[in-house]
Amino acid sequence: MKTRLFSFVLLFLILSSCASDTDTMTDISEHIREIPSANYIAHITASFPGREVKFSLNYVYSKDGDDRASVISPEELTGISMTHSEKSSHIEFDGARLEFGSLDESGLSPFSALPKLITVWTNGNFEECTSTRIYNRDAYMLVSRISDGGTDAEYRSWFSKDNLTPLYAEIFSDGERVIQCEFERAESN
Image 1 (cartoon, rainbow, N blue to C red):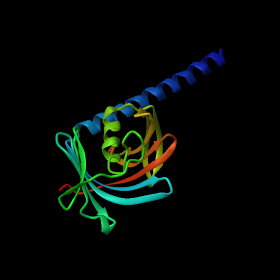
Image 2 (image 1 turned 90 degrees about the vertical axis):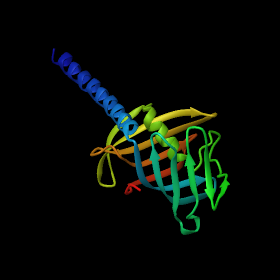
Image 3 (image 1 turned 120 degrees about the vertical axis):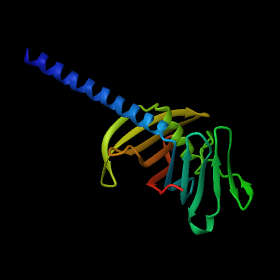
Image 4 (image 1 turned 120 degrees about the horizontal axis):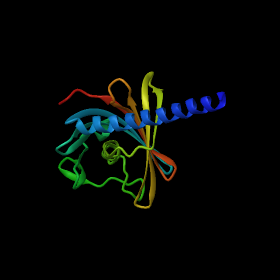
């Protein structure tokens, strides 16, 4: 009898935990979908074969318009900006549009990483949710796996438990981490 009771309680706790994780994942996706606009500083590290590229962007997300990112460091790259919409994305510098290198067959690049992350977050197709800590803050770590363009991608994202804002994200392509992104909330323009 005690074994059955223990098994029932254990099963109940496991199922309650799964329901709670599902609610958390849904809450985060709904929260992001409801934000009309947001302004972040994103510190990105992109890993190409044999080299890494590090830069920081001022990223302005707009629910109903185009997203815009401007390079703020390193100084040699300031002035480069990106505009992203559902229909197209392009990089601009001094009036010229530039093509940026792709990290995998799905078209992932250092500049497309932020729009891809936001798409993953708003779609809410998360497979895992874990309570954790990052940067001395309580956080949720969510994982989403997507097959895109012949490439298997995994998106790991950490959100603040306090206000559900993004803190950090990693993107893996075919098992290799190709993007790391640390977020800071920026003042609105």
